[in-house]
Length: 91
Image 1: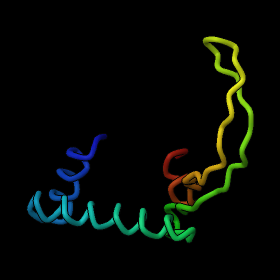
Image 2 (image 1 turned 180 degrees about the vertical axis):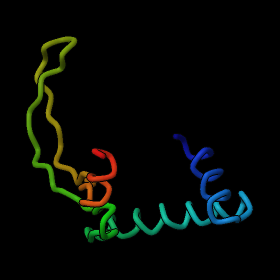
Image 3 (image 1 turned 45 degrees about the horizontal axis):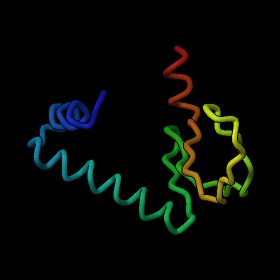
């Protein structure tokens, strides 16, 4: 499912216009992004948790040339599946 299909699904499910559904989805994505930028978590009970994780700097090998390259430290976004979603997928 892509963003357009998700907007269409939301519009049909809650009887909103597609424009309103897209604004709601954009607001949700902005809220998650802003919260993760502050290194905080977004917890949606039963669905899952969006959080961040610090990755240390390291050396890696370029698979094409075999050359060693430095990979800088970074913050990665993570998603941990909640119990209700996990159970629904495995039903």
